[in-house]
Image: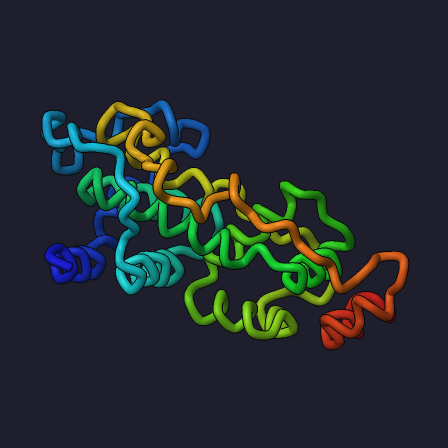
Length: 231
């Protein structure tokens, strides 16, 4: 990708920029433009591009996530760090970040991961499963793909008592960054007519487990089941 090396170099110094803008309050993430004077300005003429269905390069995506984990210690700070980082990319790249997130959310919409989420959170609604997968993506590439292959690997990321693991704010980081950087809404630039791996096209899941038959849940996630359901 032509911007690959620029982005990688930028990520090494993004921790400094993050520290300088860390005072942004979480409730101002969408509407505030106070911090924009401290970052390079985007020529608003440059955002006149057609809606895009091009995802950000996956390695660049995971590099951004990895950097956010290294530079922060809690969800609120990670959310702010990600927004500050994305604001300094091009509008097309911010759109690409959102589309990559859509794809990762689509790929992780599985019966087995839903079972894992149900066990570790002691029950979850539809939105709970969506924000659980946002949390999972925010944990990085290795955690995400390990959980895809074996949901029991989540035992290495969670605490010892049932708890809701979610990250609603992660779903909105690209939206907030795009709004802050361009003063426009990102949805006008997402080509969902040609990009199909979105929540509108989630498959109908065939569940191989049932909450009323605990043994079926144990079969899917034996380690997690033993940790939380056999107490």
